[in-house]
Amino acid sequence: MQLRNSPDHFGIVAISFHWLTVALVILAWTLGTFGDDLPRGPARAAGLFVHISAGVAIVLLLFARAAWRIGDPPSVERTLLGVWGDRASRVAHYALYVFLAAVGVAGIVLQFARGDALPVFGLFEITSPWSADRAFARSAKEVHEFLANALVILAALHATAALFHHWIFRDHTLARMLPWAAQSTRSLRASTRSPHSQ
Image (tube, rainbow, N blue to C red; front, top):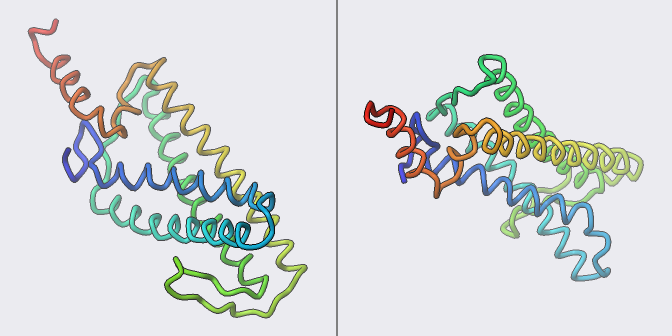
């Protein structure tokens, strides 16, 4: 598989960024939503540590992903929805990036509002610039949870749209982001361009 994006398919770097972000969001959201159900003590502390580590990783990946996208922009997949569909897709992608950043920032603010240091993968910690403030922490938690839930809903709509393109419109929107579909996508495009395929 190619490293960089092509007109037919995303490159392995863009694909890796995408699916790793998906996995981390699912992990972080699950632990954030159900972490309090873990037994008090080491299990709950470990769940919080993994939740925070996943959140930090998402923010770092977002920066790397944005930088890669600038250097290797994806080609536009023309669909039956036309120009307005392309614009709506672009807006949805930018909205996902904004929510990914906002959830991460809100999570960091929440950690600091509790007066706790921010652990960075167990390598080092960033000390909170504030003393603990329970009211502020409560508000930050509400914002963090709201944004996280909104992100998951938006991501679910994004996934639904991709499946809709795949099964209803029969275009290559989804296949372009699947590593195992690269060869079949190129073959299908080649066959549709060939005069012998008519």
